[in-house]
Length: 353
Image (tube, one colour):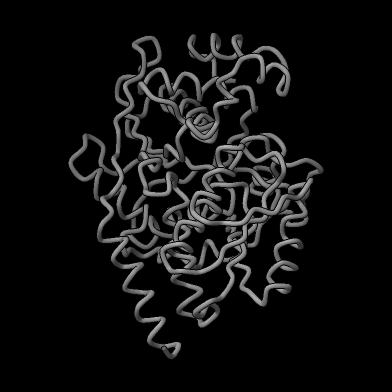
């Protein structure tokens, strides 16, 4: 089979997967009465229901399409990715679908359920001791295997068609059309590659909308400082403990100019909000969803203080089933320090410091 025939058949497989997949739900978040702000409606788009279990399913499909159409991936090409887990799971899913070998380079601290899922889809896992080592290790592994380094941290913002083609922004605004406030005042997302914030930021400008984009940034991440300062050389020594978001360097795919606001969130607040969100929705969510929720609650309070009405939209990034350890109080106390219950109690009282 010549390469063009392989490309055609592989594109049909990717298109078939897309057509078999339903869109994800946009869920109105019912807050406790003590936290509800009249005139402010909150929605979370549930990206955990994708076949590979997270928001990264969209990115992985786009990265495969981009690499194949650019001629970087051919029949038998080994695909390599640097990831904190969720992107690697989704890319392993698409690698199996397209019959390609897949290697994930992940920090050793990655949740074990994520490692199991990468392997479930046939991926091979290579560990590094520090998050900053994933880039060079991935390049070296691609060189050794004569493969292709997918490099989500460079290509996330350009692989997605931000003008439409059923990207996440187009989906959100279509689903919001008949709501009380169809054009959100704020869209709140985390930033790992920066692809999601860039997609939303570009889409609202392209569609002549007034929605603003906020990123919720955890500890040990430079994105919030970069948004505020514009210093692209920023780095930090440690990696984020909120898997999937936050980076120790400014990634090439993070487009600062598409973001209107950065909100810093402590790790214990992220975990507290994760626990509360799980109670309010009746099922477990992951820690990056908790980070998003803190950003939403702070903006909601600001709208209340300003006397403005409208809607806020954010994302359920993945399921909490991947993070059993974060629902274990003893494990959290040992690794994040004591005080989680105090943070939960404070959030329940409406204190979003």
